[in-house]
Length: 117
Image (cartoon, rainbow, N blue to C red; front, side, top):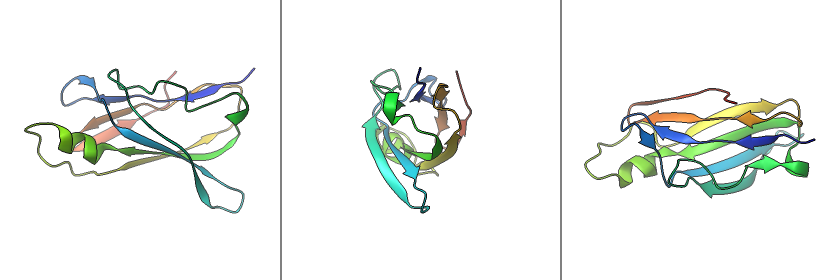
């Protein structure tokens, strides 16, 4: 049985899901090099349409999610410039059979993340 990696983005300044946030998934190789695994975008619910990793792609290792929140905030009408352009979240997948959900809560002046369920 394989786990999966998922995410979602919530804009806590509006209390709504963050739509059209570009998300990149990177994996650190054994030689410490970072390789891009995929790029996707959040839907109207602030989620991605498919798990970021699952099945045979769910591999133990070091990863980074890179959220492009500056573009999201700059696209909103009347929004002031955000202080953060991109948010990198580095994490470890220690067990490919577990589910890893990495949500991101954003506002123009800050962000927060945690391991969800």
